[in-house]
Amino acid sequence: MASCTYSVPNLDTSGDNLYGPRICWQAFVDWAWDAYDFDKGDWDEGFGYDDVCNNTQPLSRTLSAIWCLTYSSPNFPNESYSGNILEWGCRFARNAIDELDARCSRPGYIAWTQWGPFIDDWTQLYLLFFYNLSVSLRAGTILHEARHADGKGHDSGDNDSSWGYNGAWRWHVCWLAWFAFEGRSSSAALRTQAKQQANNIINSRFVTHPGFNV
Amino acid sequence: MSCENQTSGDGSDSLEIRAANPLFDRSDTSWLLGQAVRYLNTDDKKGEFAYARTVELLRRCAHDLLENVNGLFKQVKSGDAALRWNLLYVLGDSGDRSAADFLVQTALKRLPEVKEEEGCQSERDIEMLVSTMAVHAVEKVAARHPEVSEAVLEIIKNKPTRPILIEAVKVAANLGLKDKARELLSDDDAWILDIRQARKDEVHAEPEREDGKERGFTPPKSGSLYTAPSAGCCTSKER
Image (cartoon, rainbow over all chains, first blue to last red; front, side, top):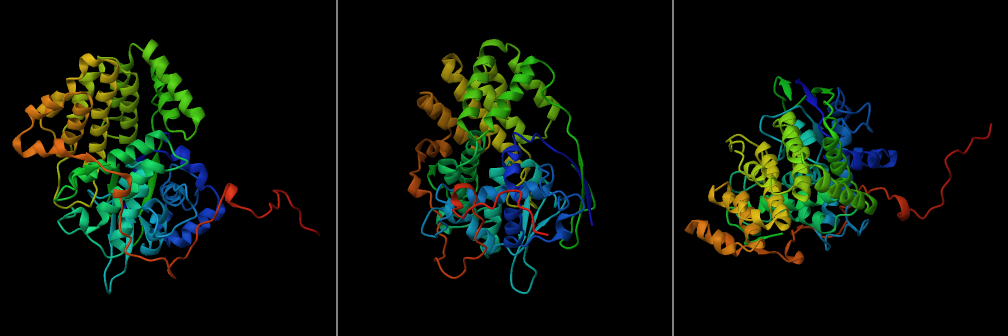
């Protein structure tokens, strides 16, 4: 077991003052807790289980990301796979992620998903996820990890070989881009960050550059 | 951030949160900056208008804006990347020509090295986003003060990491400096000038799924999506 300390960054600029009050809704907490298979033992001891509405703690900040992933489409509750990824991203994520756990750190990592036959499947989120990413970037990261949980790893180190590989980086870009295009109930700052992050991924994470930006 | 012992795959960890120091109480300008980042992170028209008003005030009255932004950067050091990103956004909207040098230096700040044993995303990606905002802030300042447009060429000249270079080339093109940017790019990087803006329908991920039985855990609806009558907040039980 590890123990860690953290200074909470500004709550306006991370988006937690905008999204935090939204997750403080029992029906949503009950739903997300089961849909993403949270467990008390992974989220207590300072991670927020005992104070779920406290937006300085990891659980609230993770639920804000899930709220953002779930409700940002202007077409909610349509989650059809024939729509765009802003519509079905949450549906895919909650079906693909086996369990979502909070941990202190794995040096250099924001999140990590373990998957495969005959092993325990899980997705771990670390302090860099809770405190160094704004809400929309956290949401994109959950979808990225969900792609891994579904069994699709990167095919060139930590990068994807091409856009056509249809891996976690493409999904990540597409969700961020659609959030920037159409995301509702969000701020100019979070939408702009999403667009810039989408382009940074396009420009650094594909061995063969797709030739466009968003 | 500090950690004792590295997280293991099983078992659970414990976390203690420290209160952050107040940031926006150094001066009147600092307080206004705090208001600007607060309004920038709201989701309604009222916040949008309040942001525009605050930016106007900063432009007209805050002659020490750059000094305050610089001070806040020093105060948070390498922490709170989202705050630094937001400050750059506001500086882009409010800063005068004197902001250009600071923005160029921020865009060119050395990023954390790529390490072998890292996850898909790391601190490098987070810092890269701050540098990206600095590049776009140069464009916003140059839109009001065309005499600093060529500051973006300084970024290109210094050959930053590829995503920053690409953003700088895009900004140079937007500022009418495409030919000058071309002269600065190496032959290997000339393709950057051909990157195009994607159409929305091109930004598509293939879900490799069909609508079917797997759909479970339908999220709760809220607000106007609820059509059932409300029971009210204070019903009492019969005794």
